[in-house]
Length: 168
Image (cartoon, rainbow, N blue to C red; front, top):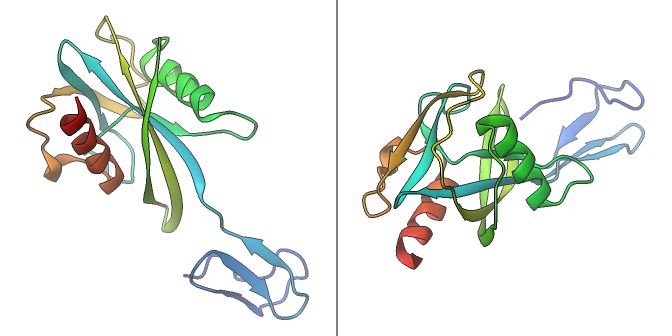
C-alpha cells in the first residue's frame, strides 16, 4: 500500500509503510500512524425485525448494513451513534444497550481503514420515513432468525447480527 508519494514533513520520497499501521520517513524520521478508527452502528429492532440500510455509497454499495458511521473526534461512541442515526434516519434513539465490538476493514477510495465497529441495540417504535438519500438507497427489514449473510456489506455486521440473533 502506497498512500503517500512524499513525506508530509520533509518532502522526501523515502517514505514506507510497515504493513501494519505506520508510515515512516527514512530521511527525517517523520512517523504517521494509521490507527484504528472508531465506528458505531445500531441493531434497531422494529416489530420483531431488524432495520437495515441498503447502502447507496461505496464501499459495498447495494449491500445491507446497520445504520451508523464513524465517531467524530471528542465524541463518545454513544454520542456518535446518536448523531449518525439522527442524520441518516431522522430519529432520536432511546435507550441503547452495548452488544460488542468487531474489527473491520473499510476500504474507501482504495485506502483500507481499519475500524473497530462498536455495536449497540435499541428498539424503535416507528419506521423511519425521512432518510439521508445520499447514503441510503432504501430501508430493509430482516428477520433475525434468517440473516442473509451474502447480502450483508461487512464481516463485522454479519458477526453482530449473528450475535444478536443468538442472544435475543
